[in-house]
Image (cartoon, rainbow, N blue to C red; front, side, top):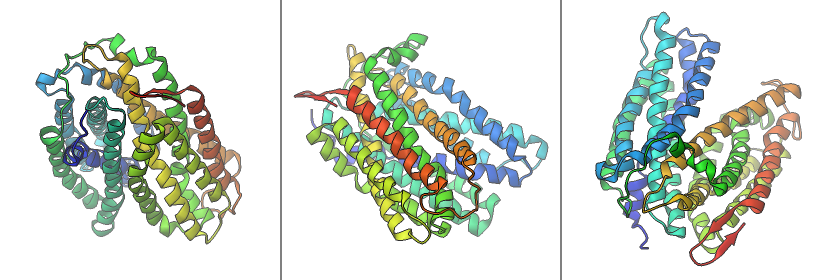
Length: 428
């Protein structure tokens, strides 16, 4: 099967940039933004949690729905085209609330639902589209790597632009302007992916929407094993992300360098994508992913020894762990695309059902990381704002806990995941 041209890969990946850029401002700015308008933080937290709990229902349903739209009507590309305006409208409304304090809570709830619905639908359809673009073992990793690079660019944009606008214009005007600028970027990128991006090679019949279709991936033992590895590994990656601000402020005592650390991390992740594609092609995706896990463990063990003033050493940790993170972006989704082959019949592939559950697992990993680390730090006596030395409770939870979880994920991958290659077996 011929490899996709670089232009086709770029067109497919285009919409991943604004999709990745949409999530970060919601997580980072919404609590402070609505609290500044007079809404209690506890209410904001409850609403954020409640809307996220809806994902447990909506994500698998959206995944199965993506398989139901026939290719003659645009298939997953049509779903992206419908979802993108919902996300653009939801994000703009989210940051332009009414002035009446009595309407803030219902406004926040409604606009969060609209934003998350658009983001989940577009993301799941985009992942499923990428999975269906090629049946080639190596080509699938190129596709997921291209999407990963675009997503990292979106995260960098979302980390820099809203903060810059807030500093210059204030929270109200800055965030509303970001949402206004985001809309044409999202719609333009959607048009590139939908109109100029590659199409699946086979116009398969649409799959029926039913409870059986939604739960079909759970009947696949290879999916269950891979999903467990993905979830455990995701928790490992989310723990340091949850605690980075605390670590930079209280252990390194350089909170001013946090933006630089993030930029180094994400740039290293993007720069390392070609490496993981080549390693996966030569040694197999599972083995390449194992190498990425090993690199992450080496980086975070080093972080445990760092203390006040060790900013340069931590920058190196960010580069190493960012490079390892690239394997998390490029390889698991490509492995999943191979697993979907088990349920392909007559050209019909339930990619949407698989990636709907996959998307839910990604969110669950973030929730578990916060639920594990924050209570653990409190139990260990850590107080935010208090200086913490190298090897302290904060250092241990930030650096060593992810290593232990990552090693558990690596053992699961080594013992249970088996890939199917066209020319040779690749037991992990």
